[in-house]
Amino acid sequence: MGKYNSYDRIADLYDHYVKADYDLDFWRAEAEGAGEVLEVTAGTGRVSLPLARAGHRVTAVDISYGLLKQLTEKAGPEKLPVETVHADMRDFDLKRTFPLVIVPFHSLEEIHDDCDVTAALRRVRVHIAPGGRAIVTLHNPAMQSGGDACMLRLMSDSELPNGNRLLFWHSRVYNATTREGMSYQLYEEYDVDGLLLRKRLFTPHFHLRDRAEIEVLADRAGLRVTRAWSGYGHEEWSGEGRYMIFELVGREE
Image (cartoon, rainbow, N blue to C red; front, side):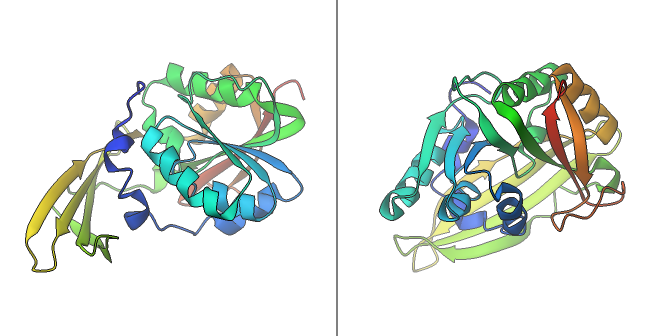
């Protein structure tokens, strides 16, 4: 990952194409009564800000300066209780613990090496308060299909603050055998006359793991799975849902 993160290159565009809210009710329900929440890979605050508005004090960790800058600028006018921390999820220590630690939006999938995943989960373990828990969300590899990088789809057409037009195109490729994939994200900015001013290409890679693999890595990190869901409506784990959502606690608890 490194200190300079690729998301910095598209931080100013992130909120124009990431408008997902399908999981927010889930996070609000799971955070109820927590009071304090640590969000790892918080981005621009898609989850952190709604939790702060619900009355929680949120510590938001991310490796991207650019994304955290967007979060801070949004939280400021509302005076929301959000503290941002620039850090790599594999190597940070806030010297305190939290009743709830969350890793939302399937971001753990962007770590390819198992040792690095274990390192990130160890950081989660270190920051769980006694009696507290963590929640990690992932895609279920059994329910994924391959994609065609040649088939770009128009995902959004929006107006930028400067009045220009932003088109966001997307495609993905996924190898079900290796469980490796890549997302192709193309951003095109046009002026009011339809003249193309700028293009940006962003290609994040991802690696999916099944439940058994995640449980092994969690165990290495000193964690154990206490609950699992197949969806953000709290559907109990069936192995057939699109998602894998795990509640984790320290292994000795």
